[in-house]
Length: 207
Ligand code: FNR
Image (cartoon, rainbow, N blue to C red):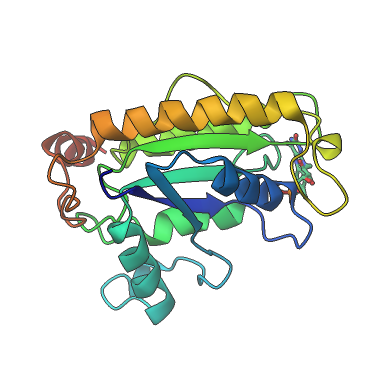
């Protein structure tokens, strides 16, 4: 079997008992053998400050290197006020700069949004997709994963015990593996994270 694709999992909550972190752990366990998922932590990233772009803090440099080494990115996030939590947006922003040196560029992505509420983080899921367009990250479209009413899906140890959710997410990850094969760079050495695509350059010129 070929070397598994490395998938950086970004969790959009810093909360100790986070459902999204539990979900990320469950996804790690459900991944097919051709994917190797691992959480890349965002809690120590400083707030983005454009004054430091040319000389970023070491935490940012290290985070960007870890993202650059991944073949793909899986976002597992709650919704805050119908949008993306600030900590997640900050992580996206710090690793996207300076312009032309984004660590995200070209990496296939997928999104799982998780909420105790009834609409499964739909707003966060789709606001995040808006950023991924600009970041040139092809995002898996089907199947979608808006995980609603999440609290009873986990047991008291944090394990995902709902069988139909486990089955659905297993299929989701299989689709993501195929999506990565279709969209990742053919040589598997990762695109230069500094290389903005012609489309992105054109867009930036317009912005
Ligand atoms: C929320 N929550 C929430 N839920 C939702 O479905 N839609 C929303 O817009 C919001 N907005 C929101 C704002 C803020 C500031 C907080 C703190 C919470 C509730 C949220 O889904 C819930 O707290 C989750 O448990 C957060 O995810 P984790 O931390 O469990 O992964």
